[in-house]
Image 1 (spheres, one colour):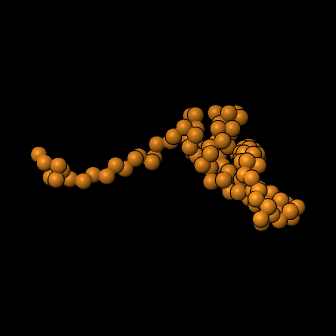
Image 2 (spheres, one colour):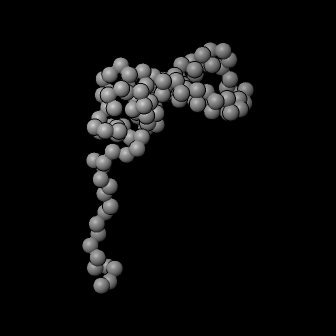
Image 3 (tube, one colour):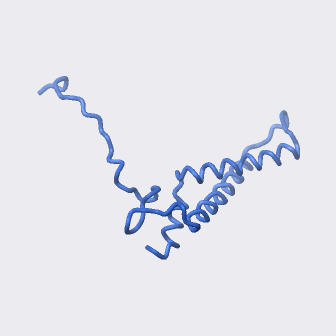
Length: 108
């Protein structure tokens, strides 16, 4: 059989299986109650953690002085990074809030 005669079959991963650290993955029943107060607090903690990480990353970038906005720029840049952290935590791509929820949830 020649390679040209082999039908093309794209690899499609099974997205129905929960992954470790993925939103929706849990120890026993496979669900996370995203409306619970514990999960909301877990999300807020994840946002704080991401914000601290972004602050450290921002300090590693040297300012050139060419477009330095002074105190006002620092104030609004800090607010911008707060929003970045909140949106990153809401996306669930880090998975920290899911892990915290699973560790602290008494139902599991």
